[in-house]
Image 1 (tube, helix red, strand yellow):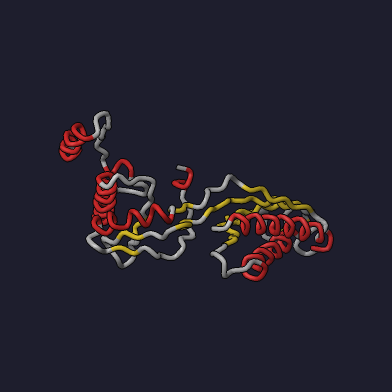
Image 2 (tube, rainbow, N blue to C red):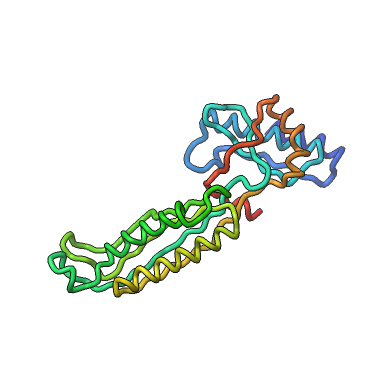
Length: 238
C-alpha cells in the first residue's frame, strides 16, 4: 500500500487523473493462499507492467514459464494459448438387459465408437503439422445398474485449437460422426457446443517493441519462443 501511495505521487506529476489502488495478493489468487512463488511471480509481472508504462507500451500479455525456470518471463508472438469450446453429446437408445443386448439399442457401444471416432478425427483426419488440435472426451455418464444397458447417455469434453478454419472443420466432422454413428445403431445423437474462449494471441509487432522492456524487467532472463499452450484463458476476451 505504501508503494502504491509513492507511485501515485509520481503519477500525479506526469499523468494527472490516473488512479492507483493497492491490491492484496491473497484476494485475487485462485486456488488457495499464495505461496512464495506466487508472490515472486506477482512481483516480476508487476515490475514488467510498470516498466511497460514507463516505456508507454500497452496491450501485451505475458505468461510465466514456471517449470524449472523461476524468475523467467516467457511468451510467443502470435497465437499463444488455445481457443477452447466445451461440448455435450446426448445419446438416445433403447434400454435392455445386459443378457439380451439385441433386444435394445446399445448406447454404451455407441458412445465407445464415438470416442474412437473423435480420436481418429484429431489424429488422422486433420493436418497435425499446422497447429496443435486436441479433441477430448472427458466424461461419459449413463445408467444406474451394472446389468442394464441404459436408454440415454451423456458425454462431455472439449475442443482446443489455434486455427479458426481447422476448428470449424473439426466441429463439423464431430457433429457428422455423432449423427452417423448413432443412426447406424438405430438410436439418435446430438452434439451442442458451448461459447468458446478465443485464441489468446500477442500482436507480433507490439511484442517486438516490448522485448527491450521485458528484457530489463526480467534482468535478461526471457524466452520469447515458448511452445503453444493448449490451455485456454478468458483473458482473450479482453
